[in-house]
Length: 167
Ligand code: AMP
Image (cartoon, rainbow, N blue to C red; front, side, top):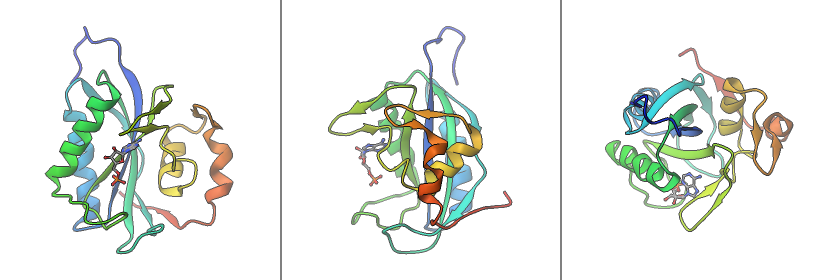
């Protein structure tokens, strides 16, 4: 939760994905945990979407995007997200392996970040329907720093299977 004194918050967009275990429940629980991170509150989240794995094996994914307000710095936020991933028992046996919980920083305010541990905006945001479409659902006119209006990329992902769930 955020106190009134902590005014320097940023709007940050987090991508959530799960394709192991009860994926719907995992995503719903992770949304609750995002709101419980220090110096952070969950503002809004998209519907849950069912998507086919891209360059990966396993079950369909359940995906969503959340907008949070946070005073955490990007690296601190990444640590908190890894902490939540670990609560779901996620290990990383190989690249794009099925996962109980994957949390990505899609956008961090208007910042562009390139470090050893972080690339923001997330490099796959404009290329993956599972991130772009839920983002557009909650903020249809959002601009991606360095790339332009997010909706301009929708046509590029039109061939990727994505279905809004009833939840
Ligand atoms: P993955 O196994 O796909 O979840 O990748 C995890 C690693 O990607 C993390 O340990 C991060 O250091 C790195 N990474 C780079 N950019 C981002 C980002 N925007 N959001 C989350 N992780 C990122």
